[in-house]
Length: 102
Image 1 (tube, rainbow, N blue to C red):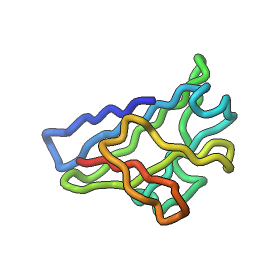
Image 2 (tube, rainbow, N blue to C red):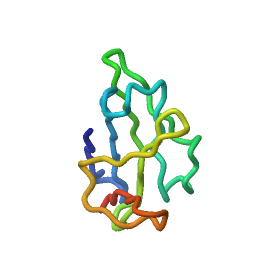
Image 3 (tube, rainbow, N blue to C red):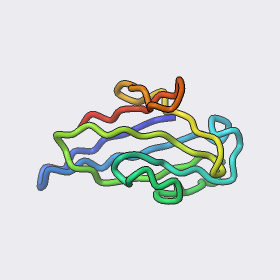
């Protein structure tokens, strides 16, 4: 898994690119990136499946903020990105949310 941040000079926005390898997603058919930036909509921000079996998606987020996020594979299995800036309790049992600091 990887997260790449590209800060734009022309406006207070960062292009955040998420990438998940197929085996990291349990060889899922689809993966969505879900977080407070999309109101935790599990059907929003579906990642594009690439030829090598990995998944990729880019979002533009306002800088100067922190965002919580997770991934969901095949509408059922939640998992985190080991490249998150930090983690915080999700409030759902012992599950953690990744944090993006922009």
